[in-house]
Length: 248
Image 1: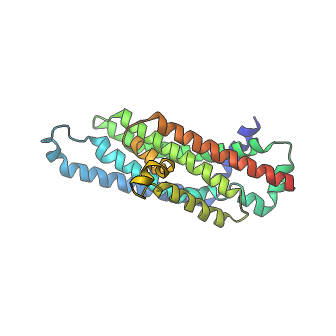
Image 2: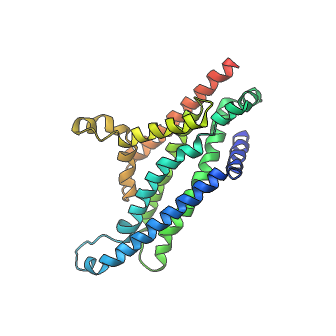
């Protein structure tokens, strides 16, 4: 119950910040422009596609590129949303009050994480209206579409977990945002080091595990990666909060 209370409080507080409204509006505007641009490009080559065997469909040429662009944009803006989760509490001096309250660190961390995740879910819901609108005038592969939306939601859950951890390490939201972006970017491009890196290091790449799902291919290994990623950073955040509570 306490986790839900903290989550709802965090979710409501997002809408008190002009930053959250700005990020939500600007990202939706950019993605809407990408969506309509992909539709124009699809109509431009539609006559050629009819002559090809096994030609790519609407999902391959419109939805998948849209979600790929969305994943890159969210990689950049997620740190701006997660930077204040714990660092602002410490900067304002309210973290000590929160730690002295009759609530354990696990409830605090999970509450804040779920609150931010609710906001991210709102983003994915609004974005999903774009590809789903195509079902009105064409045959839409719902399996591939929901696979791509699932990949985007898992990415956002991973971004939020990493951002929450980085926010717990500093009292400066700006430093939390920069360090979160650096960490996520590193994990995004870590598989760019050649064949040897592809066998070992690239397993930790966010891009390697999200790209197949964005194309409509769901693998249990990719799902397990995201679950372990999220659990790891949430547990690290709880441990960090434990150490801060001992210091207080």
